[in-house]
Length: 177
Length: 250
Image 1 (cartoon, rainbow over the protein chains, first blue to last red):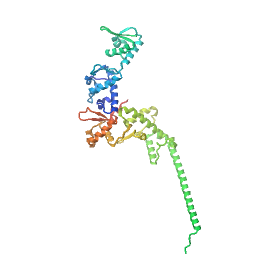
Image 2: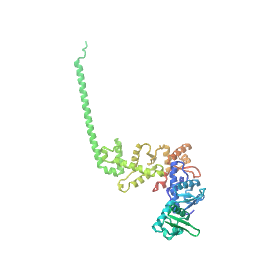
Image 3: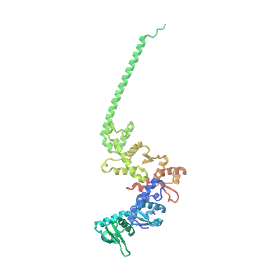
Image 4: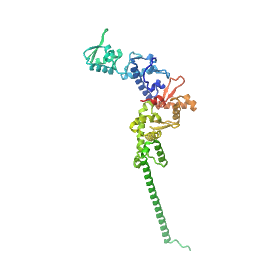
């Protein structure tokens, strides 16, 4: 388990936080806190994919200090809640592997498009690597974004006819309009 | 032969009776007048006292407490009257303002403590919320209890729960807390915010059923959280007593 530099909320050290609460109102508070904790954790650690089967590898779901773990089924149900607001999506039918969007795909898309518009980069082709890892985007929130998530965000722009994604074997790029 | 009572005697008797009555009325009126005068003097004195010490009463919590106690001993409740000479003091306003702020803090922290808050945490948050401008006005726990008790008039929604040893909690959600529930809170308070059935058996000699009933009630009130990952038994946690929760900034 790797050390994580994150400011844990008080709930993280609260043992019952790791047991799904029977009382509906309490449970809803609990789930809300979990949703926000998962997103914060993924953002801080740049975790784009969570495999629920290996959840105990992630400190967020496993607080060794108090010996409490979040159960598999509870994690899935919270991820399903995140999915409702576009903050997560399952990658397989069994809902084992999940992509986490601490910014929704739409938010990522508009960040990228704003950057491109400000730079007057429309009508030129840029490689995905250049955009996500290039020197120019070092200060941008989307710098270092994982390719799979990046492409999904660009597909959002594509549907709005604001770009065209080019996925050739030798060159993955995008042309903005 | 005995002389029969004449008309004159009856009239004489009647006259005497009337005289007595007049005299009685006179005395009564006199007394009333005197009492009114005394009351007037008392009122003036009290007003003078209140006005003279207005600032101390507003500023000094110890003084305020004594003033409250003094009023209580002569059967006056400065909180219940917003008009008349008490309004000179603005002491009612002071407590009304506090009461409103208590409600605000309780609502703002409800999402994490389920509507139960320790008096210390309440005070810290309230003072923080009052901000810099009111800093000169020190708020004591006694003030808070007085103000919170005033909120009872809104029904069972607000309650001050004595925890013993001068500690209190303020409950801001409807639902009665019995003696058993406050006993549980007291136990949890000295046990890192949690208890269990066996813990209560050990500390209070309670039967399992009694503990379970009381604990489940508190879960259903949203005051307690259950922890099923303790290897021995189910634990019941109270966020309102959990240090990290109490100290959390948000």
